[in-house]
Amino acid sequence: MLHPKGLCLPLLVLVCLIAQSSSLGFRNGRHMNGFLGQPSSMPTLQRSLSVEDLWFEQRLNHFKPDDTRTWQQRYFVNDAFYRNDSQAPVFLMIGGEGEATKNWMREGAWIHYAEHFGALCIQLEHRFYGKSHPTSDLSNSNLAYLSSEQALADLANFVSAMKRQYNMADSQKWIAFGGSYPGSLAAWAREKYPHLIDGAISSSGPLLAQVDFSQYFEVVKASLASYKPECVEAVSRGFAQVEILLKHMIGQRNLDEKFKTCTPLKDSIENKLDIANLFENIASNFAGVVQYNKDNSPHAKITIDQVCDVMLNTTMGPPVTRLGAVNDLLLKQSKTNCLDYKYDKMIAEMKNVSWDSEVAKGMRQWTYQTCTEFGFYQTSENKSDTFGDRFGIDFFIRQCMDIFSDRMNDKFLEQAVAQTNKYYGALKPGTTNVLYVHGSIDPWHALGLYVSTNSNTPAIYIEGTAHCANMYEPANCDPPQLKEARNKILKYLAKLLDGYASFASFT
Image (tube, rainbow, N blue to C red; front, side):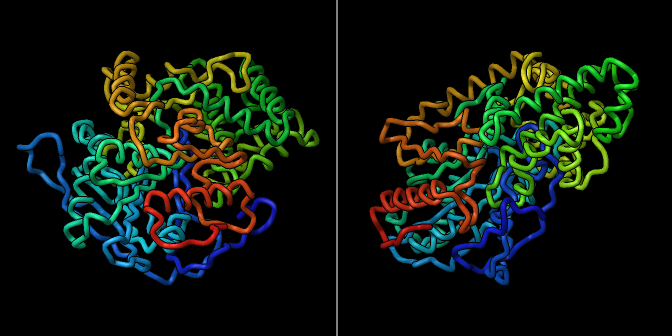
């Protein structure tokens, strides 16, 4: 395992159970098995404690009273620090677009916050992800019950039941935690159910739904340039050289060799969808590295520094050769032998509705949510730009139509996204008691509330950190601004909890 600039040692040694996590690749701003993964890539001592799978009977459809169908939703509990009195808070970690991870019940910044405040920690897995299967399969008709609105209603129903189960006092406050999509859910849970959720820490949460998320790769470029501006120039030249080599059969064979393609490019040169997928895959190599850069998670095995050092190493050959070397790094990380860019094969895999399929680990479900609620498509549509013009918005809308339904066209997407923004308020949330936390390296901050002059919607913007960095297990090598952000979060929690429980500096 590669560690950026040396081993990071945990500051607070806690016991934690660790589970194995496998990376299935990076697609559309997401690791194939969810965005968050494990809370740390560093060894700790708390892993001897077990975490039990618990199950809650949940309604399938919260918005149709005469629909009595139910299913079993998974959740976890850690009561090691719970003071169990009339003022003890409850911290609720919201699951997202991947399997809920037991390690988060013993590690991560929120566990340290819980120790400070004597909180009960609960994590609820999102419907249709992990082991929380509301339906027999992932067919289109069943996915109709997958939405952020239904997920928030799950949370509300669950919180009400837990209050009864634990015989909680009305004075016990519930604080929601989440990162990325669950970061959005944490803020929206406070907005839609303020009588149940007293406050929220929303990390890296995109609040603005947007079909064409063109800003994503703009931030990727800026983040690469923050290491060395010449890095972006080298990447740009590399992509331009790919275009040149594609024009000739010898060049196509050259690209096959450099990028270890699973099938010869000559067979796909007239297929625009295959070529679009090729370019999107190569660009995603950089997107994945940037999004999880040095965040203390297992996703952060390869850093911006490393890929830029490769792109600037002229002894390796021209920029296109260096692009291939970066691709090699990512193939090895994902334990993949070759670059598969065939569009029809990707669509066929994504149409598999079985819970036993690889795409059932989150990609089919998350893609459905992007097609019906959020968009979030990371496009590149300018021929003179770094990543070229091969994967514009039409490429992603076509996927919605090919995977799910012809009706999911551009008009459908625009209407769906407009409805989402109207329902939740986009970047003008009408809620209080939510702290929004973002990192400058993270491309998702472009759709989040990262600058605020309104005391009702405070924000923390952490220079030089990536996706959900504040959520991971603290380490000695964390930059000062990240340590400071965690201290600010702790103080905000104290404010939400009316100063309950004294605390020292969180470092």
